[in-house]
Image (cartoon, rainbow, N blue to C red; front, side):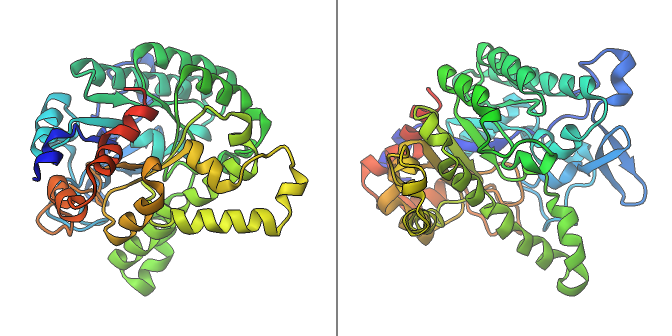
Length: 392
């Protein structure tokens, strides 16, 4: 690596903990063990699968691809016992971070993100509220191993705003650095993202300095289920790969709602992050929003909105990239203050290659794609922007 890159403490702004099989069963009263998420072996599919009571969530190995010799989705790890320690053990993770040249990681869940619907639509609400709290406690345990290097993000029982406010305050005390929220709460029968119903939560997050993170897969969409209708005509790998584009770009609607719905206007000191969505599309999105803002008369309907969408974005919204080359460089030309770097470890799209993966090692990718950029830009994108937003 170039000397300047070795000096930067790189913050990886999107990684996931591979939840261990006993995460919930070991932390709830014995009477509740059958009612919380747990892994079961499915004889039909011959793989370990996460279940919430009788609800099938997803295969345990589908989120465990870092270093794996296979193509998603059907060539995933079949047994949890075959998943490398670095995916679920914090001390082994630190060793892998050192290998990859990563100083700190922002930690996201798998189940509390991609299986949000299983929690949000469940009937036994008290139990699933408990599941969220247990997960946040588990993240705090990771943080305790290396507080400067593991930066947990709080999951919330967003179906109950009063309880969400209490859980957010509790997580702030435990050292969490932000919260993860649904891209589209309306998909769960809740008020839309721009509704003032959520204003107490935004106000609390703003006061606490807790950025709001919208990770893909948090809108209730089941990408694996949605692609199944295309498998017959496209093939399993083509259908899976094709579905990911819409998955990645779903946050364009989230960003638009935050701006056009006045959320950014009402909470000018609250930061929002589009996670695992890439950045190349951002310049097009901002130009589109500015054009439609004027073209459709938003400035006359809402004269209180004093900025253009692109100005609101530059003030308080951020995006992250992990595999882009030309499109990331394109975005950096005008948005270098609003962009983070991530690896998406350990998912199948991550910059953590296995023998069949097209990915490069993180430090190789950064050097080859961005090593020529000015030092100031590198310091912002690899460290400074995230350090500012997550209050490091």
